[in-house]
Length: 133
Ligand SMILES: [Zn+2]
Image (cartoon, rainbow, N blue to C red; front, top):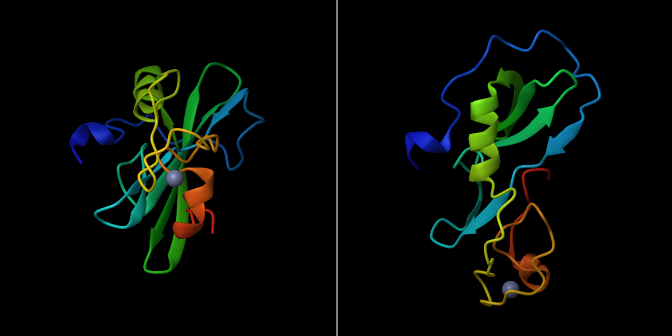
């Protein structure tokens, strides 16, 4: 995973304990890595860190990062620039019409779970719990 997989610059910490209702919310996209046998995040390139991108009112962009380390969970909020938000959406494949394929069966059907990039519905039973579990 290169440097480009991560957010490079952050704006000053979003000055709120709670985010106002966002105009848009973009979930992280997960992909199954058959070598590591783990689900990775397209947003962070990591299997322990996952992000959600929010667009609160006022044209700002805020990332919520969830971190899992040794059974511990934490999260942080931070604001990013429009440029970083665009790169984030690109990393996660939003707005792209690429052909997706299941890594288990090679099929292109059953990939309607939007945040699971390369595992089909019928093969999903073989995957471990996602970041939400
Ligand atoms: Zn499959």
